Image (cartoon, rainbow, N blue to C red; front, side, top):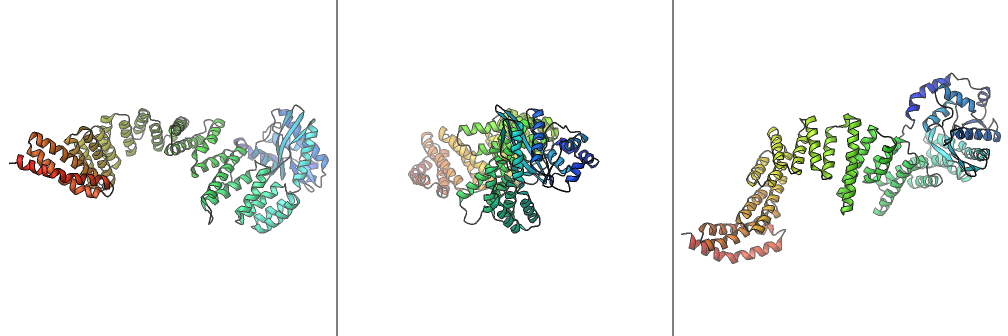
Length: 597
């Protein structure tokens, strides 16, 4: 799930070649040259501190204390002068702390397999140093050292020096494990690491080699157990968190036989916790945080990525790539929240996400005009629609249509936004232009039908549905449009008791049934016909009308034909109407005899 990423800041990426060249021509002091034949080398660069001088002083104090506690046959501490010469030759400050990627590059140049990273602060009672020992071949792997505190800086530095010596005891075993791992000898790596950890259970660099070896042996439970142990003592261990995230993700994507839904849910929770911890462990590592953010939508939890996106934008304002990622995160989160909304609070929350999407998307298009693509405008229109701002959506649609005049989808979206904003005639004019240019545009016909229904253009609506069918539009979808129009007309007839409304319902329902037969259309068709018959029977008697009498007779016949099929879905209602029809038949027959001479 997570690949190697580049964490070297831009400054380091630009200057790294000069740093290499500078070191190539740099004369190492005699002491250092001699020491390369003896002990290992460790680099102590300037520590992070609010007080720039204190960071420099603390690093030198640790160098001095570590040099006192070791001999050249065991360990060589890279002198301050050598570090400063290398930094100055490449244009780096000698008093500022290095970024992680720069520290790794410098350690490589001065041939130090390990280096320290840390911070120092002045406390009311003295000094506090927080640090970890890093192995240069993989800057993400290190041993967190105990917090050192002392009344004097040298006291705290002395504690750090002792902790470095203790942490380095695992390195020979870790190197053996690493070599076995690199050669694919995973079982040998496991056996050696387990034996060494039995002697030194707090050796986290070695423990990570063990966890990774278990992972390669496809023993996820063992890999997780070791990685969780590392994480417990070092919550910022990127390798442990990455392995946990990858393993939990694999267990979710390919569940083992017999796993329960509850166990899968638990694995998902643990994965999300690992992802959040990974991002928190190294918030300045943009690529890492982006990888984490991209995983949340895959787990159907896009909303959980919002805090990370918000922090990224705050720390890196105006970055086009990050703006694009935030734009997509807010849109996904808004859509997900809106689709699962259970109350008004959820809907309000979703709208807040869409508003953030609009704000971020607008800024993205301003910073990088190339981002204003067709897809961008479509999404922006959808966001405004979700915010119930059809006028804004129409403005965006008009702008997009001018920029991309030949895109048929944008034209339909523009007409749709005119429709939603209540500008029905303008919407109809726009969709007619679309269909004139593309007579087989299915979305155009669907939208035109909706607009005509809103304008009460019933005869035109029938023609539109028929024309759409002729042009190959899906008859099932057209059937649903006709069914909706028939249902609306039936409801209008129930309110008005007007035969014309029921007859309009019959026309649309018959069309719906012709396009794609359904129990819904059959039942409503029968119910509408029954209503026509009932109303016409009463009116025929009052007006002594042959035409109304025949209308009633034909309507009851139509109802008798369709209600049985509609009864498959509405058995009780259909049965009541079918039972009532015979009660009207004698009266209707009598009216026909009396009035139709």
